[in-house]
Length: 324
Image (tube, rainbow, N blue to C red; front, side, top):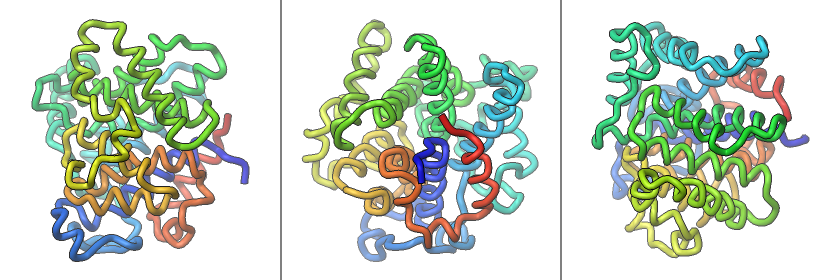
């Protein structure tokens, strides 16, 4: 099958998320005693195998919103996107079974602020130091693919591309650190699609481009030190597992996802590694899985895992209708 980045990336996110859902909040010691080896069910939320969580729900809400804008030949409508996030929280839209069962505190606060502030997308996102969870990074893949498409087809400058990525993050996570995490992820997405060479070579090219971009702004440059461990991927690869943290902090999640990518050699081993780090298992695997999906391709995601994914046909139909 010819590679389709929408299918590769989005299903990469969803499958990684679903793989991690039964293990969410399990410690690393618990994971070592009962490691993830397959797509299983129940566990933390007592839900069937193939159930995905808020990571995928918000990714898919973003995908639907972007698709609607594309149909109208209009720019992405971030208010529409935020409205769809509210529909997910309040009405169970974009969920596996019609009911929301997991939501991050910062995301919930942002949705409440959005509704209280007259649906102002620029007043909704939380911007304090403690608001740097991974809740915008986990859903950023469709925005990255959309921005990549704009750059590829229309020559959108990097500054405008990153403004769109930052706006998408800022809907819920409006601190510059969260935005930079999403921006660096975008440069990785673009490098995986644009560059030649190994996975490591492509990801390093993306990180080089991302660091070059953010170093041009004094404010952004000051924040970059939080991501220092991701600057040189050969060094990150040599880090022992005990030094890789996998909680809900955006820097930890981004670092753990990149580490899971560079120490493995397939989609399957990458997302299993991410889950077996423990703690925020679904999100680490979703973030890593999106990038792994882009590099290895949809065909390399185990079919027996895909067969268990809730609402698989709906998701894939949206993805295969797009290609670039």
